[in-house]
Length: 288
Image 1 (cartoon, rainbow, N blue to C red):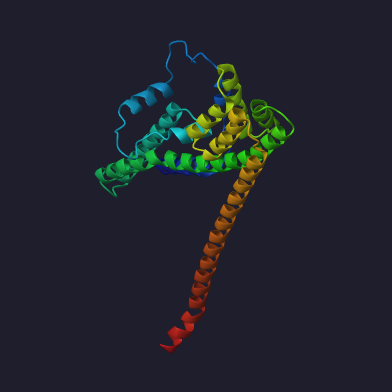
Image 2: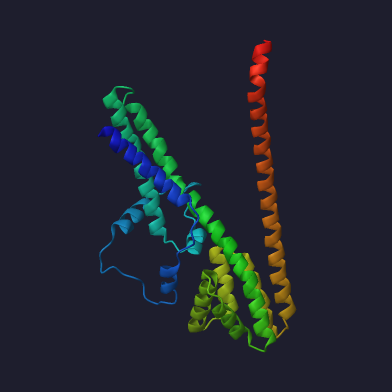
């Protein structure tokens, strides 16, 4: 039974790591539904376990590198700070608990003293604490690339709307309403909120670009601002900016493809050396 429970816990830990490492699309439904609301969400005076644990941990986080909250990445993937901190705390507790259970197991078998697994438990907890940061960084990087690709398309759509004679604000909203991908939905929600707040749409897009760390969106908003403030013709500027983004992304894809080809070449060379060594070993041994 001890072996079965230990194996089940190890299998569960490996499954959680693999599930977090797999690529996934950002889930922004709940965050988008809250955009534009003027009342804060309440839970009837009751605080959930997630909120209590996250609040307790945030109050005790040291102000040193490694313990800061990546607010830009969280805003991009649509995860709240409390949920992120609660996940980190669960991972840390899970890492420490797994080592403690393993320590009990080896102590029953009489292999090692309990102090050694306890020390490894602290190391496992510290390691598990930083794993959600790595997963969040990967998800945010993938989401940011997708957002930039959609911004390149968005620039083309805004340019087409402006060429057809639409005002700058209407052109921004119409272009955002065409796309069905989550970046278009995010842009459309931000523009809708700016309309109800009586703020300029390009200012709202610049603020959004800073919140999610996508400067390409801010550059597009600044180009449209020239049209709204000075009445300048920005069709060619929008087309050039969109083309520049596509060329930049294509060059990045070529760079990643070249690096992958180099890694494959190195791996093939190592395998060839190993295979050659296996073939030559009997002959060398016979000569010796």
